[in-house]
Amino acid sequence: MLSVEIKKDGNVVGLMMAEEKTFKTGSRGYFGTGKMQIGEKRYQVQVQLVEIGSKPKPEEMALKDE
Image (cartoon, rainbow, N blue to C red):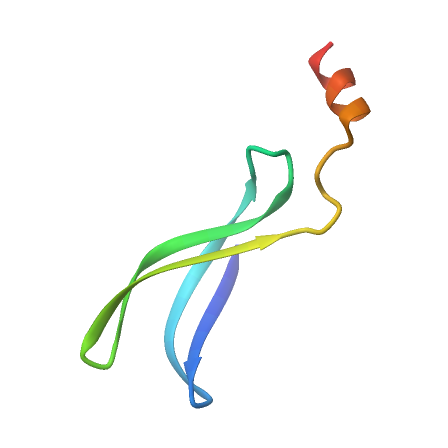
């Protein structure tokens, strides 16, 4: 699990958690979603981190399906 800080003018105004995830494409990374208040306004927030090169190659997917 990752902690993600949301900053405004260098000050932390929000914190959200991102869980480890394997995406539908097979890529691996982290994903988090939620709502947070910044000042007087509320926001819907998403964060997605995808590991570059983590998507399995087509031949790896074929072996997995056997």
